Image (cartoon, rainbow, N blue to C red; front, top):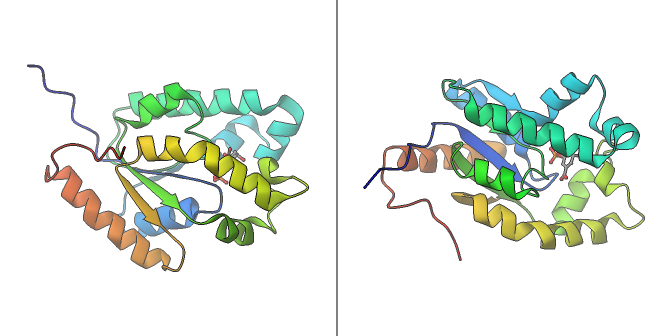
Length: 190
Ligand code: S3P
């Protein structure tokens, strides 16, 4: 029987806005020395404007197309191991979820809606949270997206109440375990 291709040694962070993907990815870079790919930052660079303006002027669809295109490029590129910080909505499209399954060790950073609300309430950079009642919006989006995050993740980490250092070292330990083959199959929770 043909063996599936090995999963590249990337560490990929997924999860809702405000769950710490950017902070933890920087901590992982510091600890590991791997290059960091921040997908939102690359999209902003390519578009020559902040994400909020892409949404406003070009629409969410254009942003999502750029996001899927970039994810596909990252999956196809033969790079040495890197840390990939995704945007919170990368799991929306089924084709992205299929790519995430073989792009690296996928870590879902999560937190309760109230924590996310407190962390994001002063940010003006997240167009999807420009709502009359952002907490309700967060809860709705989380309910919709949680099964998708769960589907893609090899590991889930509740970030509430832990320091970035604690989270990053925990991720490293389990990534080592994963990449040295001490797992029977990627943990797919029901
Ligand atoms: C989005 C999350 C954002 C950014 C865009 C859309 C989402 O990234 O990609 O505003 O749909 O959840 P962060 O999760 O880094 O805030």
